[in-house]
Image 1 (cartoon, rainbow, N blue to C red):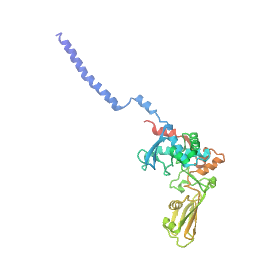
Image 2: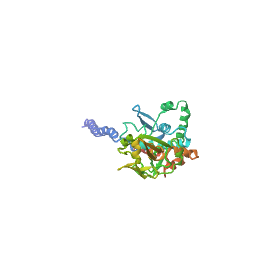
Image 3: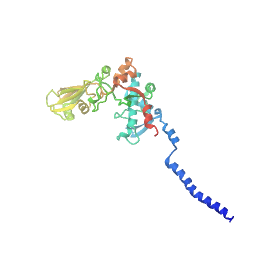
Image 4: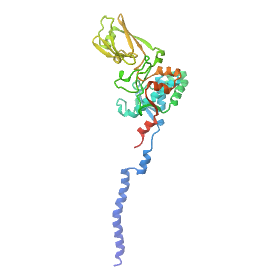
Length: 338
């Protein structure tokens, strides 16, 4: 009976292996399927992206290509394109804050904009923000490039990472060239009422070059663009309503009523503050200001800066009840690993 003992041991080992081997084979694949251990997940959840390293993908309209660059460099290109470099440094800082807020909003919500080409965050046109890169600015400014680019870069760096918020959310930091002495309530030009985009006084606008401008259209062109007939009458139409900012809210021509914005867009006027008169076969239209009038007036910002106001004073005047916050607070939330 003794010779049977080794055989018993071998059988016992084989039986044990039939239970252990499947477990050894399953464990690696289970780990791969279930992902990292809990300790690794906790470490991963703390990882954030520094917004100073955030990049912006800009669709270049002229070349139909996408140019990707750091966020702060993008802001320099916007400020250089949207505001004269000759403006006061505090006005340039205010513009940098508006531009950075604008792009932060787009980066946070770009997936909702179906008009953008794949891979792009924003365009380089007035549909979003005008942007020019270094090479384009060199061609534009020529021998003044170094001086102007340095000044704008300093303004952007002085506000690095700062954005405007209202109730802990980035605002729609709209801006325009020149007001008529006031800005507009958002709902009196656009459809939505936005609490921080309220009409405020902007007396500095009257000092802007071409604050008042004239445009002449033939009667035939005027009639065609508006789809009206004014016959031989000198009485072209009647303004039936004005906005809080003293611009044209509504005008009636014969039996047809237009909003001020409709008139501006159909006749390609500089603003919705307009008057007109007939002179023979022509209509002479006089406008005051330039732009939609909602948000920050750029010439108003420059006027405030000339009076010694800083960029915080400027943005708090044109955007009501806003706070200056760090973009990191929002970019980290978007890019944090979950």
